Structure formats: C-alpha cells, structure tokens
Length: 358
Image (cartoon, rainbow, N blue to C red):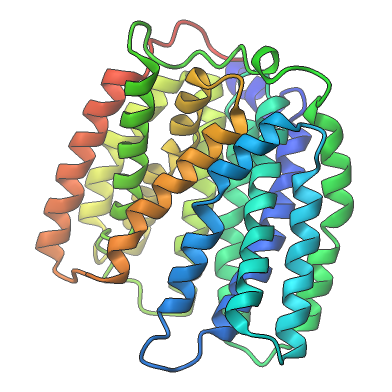
C-alpha cells in the first residue's frame, strides 16, 4: 500500500490531471465536430477515416519538432487551432475537409503537448502520461453522445476555451530549460541488451495489434447508449489505473498480469456486461507501458516516442474501416492469439522490475 500511496501522490502529478482535462475537452470538441460533419452519404466513413489519419499519424513528426524546440507551447497552439476549426464548422461555408485538416493539426499538437509535459515532468513515472491519455476515452464518448442531440457548436466551443488556462499552467511543468535526456533518464524499462531498434519495432507491433484487438472484443451486451458510455469509462479508467499500478508494483508485473487476466474476462463476458467491463479495464492497462518502453530508448526525444505510439494505434485501426468480423468464435480466436503474441513480445522487451518507481 505504501507504493500505491506514493504513486497516487507523486511529484508533478498535477501535470497529468491538467492534461486529463485538456485531453477530455479536446476529444469532446473533435468528436462532436466529426460526428456532426459525417453526413449520410454512402461514403460517410471517409470523414472519420481521414480524421484518424490526419490527427494521429503526424504526431511523430510534430513530436520530433517539439523535442527540438522545447519552449514551443504545442498544447496552447493546438487548442487555438481546434477552436478556430470548430468555429468554421459552426459558421458553415468552408470546405469541410479543409477545416478538418485544421482541426486535426490542432488535435495532433495538443496530444504532443500533453505528452511532452507529462513525460518530462514525471521523473520516469508512468502515472503522469497515463492519467493524461485516459482523459481521451471520456471525451470521445461525451462528444459522440452530444453530437446525437440538437446541441449547437457554441457550448462545446466555450468548453474547449476553458482548457486554455490549463495549457498555460501545465507548460510550467515541462522544464523546457533542461534537456530531455536528463529529464527522462529514469525511464529504464527496456530489457538490457536488446537493441533499441528491436524495442521500437516490437512496441509498434504490440500497440498496433492491441489497437486492432480493441475492435474485435466480443461484446454482444453492448446494445444501448448507456452501454457505450460504460465501455469508454472502463477503457479510460484502465489506462489511468495501469500507469498508477505500474508505478506502485512494477511495470513488467502489471503488464503481464493485466494482459493475462484480461483474456478470460473478455471471452467470458461476451453476454455479461460487468465481466466484460472488468476485462476491458484490464486490457487497457498496458497503454502507458508501451509508451514507457519507447521513451526508455528515445530519452532525448519523448515527443517522437509518443508520436510513434499514436502512429501504431492508427495502423492497427485502419483494417477496421474495410473489414469487420461479427462472429464471436472468430473474434475470440483472434483476441486469444494476439494476446499470446503480445505477452511474448512484452516478455522479450520489458526489463526486470528492479525497483518500485515510488
């Protein structure tokens, strides 16, 4: 319990909570805009597909540039761009794919800003970026649900404006005057002796596979809007809890336990919501661990390390836009096989828990 208490009260953890709110607000705005703009044509899927590509793939490049220019406030710039884009959507009269590019650029910049702030201020802890990233799941479902109503754009835009002060305050935690190499020196979670290129390749595969698996999880119980809300709450909670528990009890231990324990809950919970939600929460707990692996071999470039994971996430999502499998049996086999692969990959790349990161 001592380790857990330290993980929950760690230095600079406020940076994670501030970017939790920023991340929540921006996903509310982005998904509200995307859902409102999708339309009813036969190619309605192209708009969210373009959003996924434009918002996530460029984050590695933006992260690299932000590593080189650490005093640049990517979070603030991204927030302003998203507000401008949403105002253009609300006003109408602008080519919607042109506005989408602006929205996605803002989204990518703000993601990178949150990663830079939380990683640089964490002293090697996973809880800070985990709390930041978890806010997105809550924002995605909130924005999606609001878009189904007759609510106009303006309340959501005003909500996004409320995040601006937090981007200014959070930037103080970034320690832009110090080198990333020094600030990230405590990220030592990769197995010793394994080349950095192998760590990066394997972590990319893990993230991409788990991203794909997220859309194969059997959930016959998910039939209402409330069920969708509970699903995203479980996902967001799992992301945050995974980082906190990794700090308290060890990265490798939590990575393996959460992956192994999630499988029976996911498979047996196909028609039992509570069982399934427990499995989904466990399944979501490795998010910050793969990020920590990347930072461990890219200490001088935490923004690039984060962007690399988001590119992998997008790579895993792409097949879903073209092929969807509804068979419980087939999805169960896919999830089981890919879980085994991911566990083997984590065993091969995550170093021994030599100390508790308290």
